[in-house]
Structure formats: structure tokens, C-alpha cells
Length: 117
Image 1 (cartoon, rainbow, N blue to C red):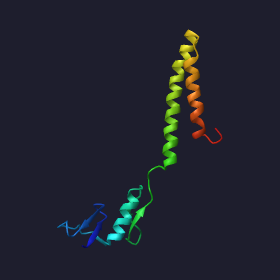
Image 2 (cartoon, rainbow, N blue to C red):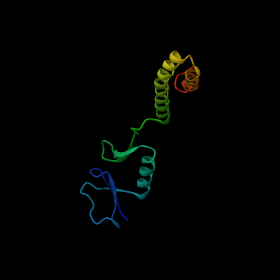
Image 3 (cartoon, helix red, strand yellow):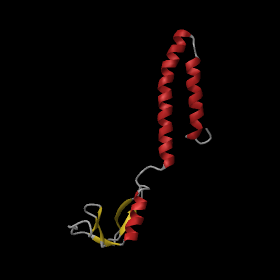
Image 4 (tube, rainbow, N blue to C red):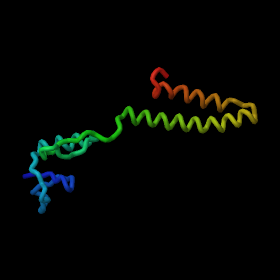
């Protein structure tokens, strides 16, 4: 079963399934296709090197650490927004309970994003 990769469509073609193979189809082994697709599930793209060989290109997705850091930053921003309301409530009512709870939540999150916490 001859396999091909088409840079123009960014797809694989199998002559046992596909009746038309794009003109830019490049022959590829089943093993190579499996390896390329496995890396694609990890975020790598499939492309070509300068010699026209089919290769995995580096992932453009943020790392898990960067994604986790961004999530924590969003949580901290949300806490900061809530603290503004809690501060207003504390000034108006004298009750600082909610403000204290929000500050505790922020204190628990900061070490995960800021080295040395």
C-alpha cells in the first residue's frame, strides 16, 4: 500500500483508499507516517526540511508549564478583581472576612508562578 504525504494539503494519502493523489505527493513509509502522526499528537507539525524531506516541525503550542502559569495568572487576576469589591465591602461594613479569604487564596497560588513565592 503506497503512502504519500502532500505538503499542499498537509495530508497523507493511501493508494488503497484514495483514488487521487495530489501532484506534490511524496512517498512515505508506513513507519515514517506513524512516527510523524505520533509526534503530531504531542503538538509537532508536519512539514518539510530544506531538502524536501518530510519532518516534524517544533511545536508551536505553549509548554505545559507555560499553560499552567497562564492559568494561575488568570486566577490571580480574578482574585484581584474580587478583592476590589471585598475591600469596598470592608470599608463600608467593617467586615474583612472575604478580603482575608481572597488574600489567602492569592498567597497559595503565587508560589506556583513566582520563583521564591
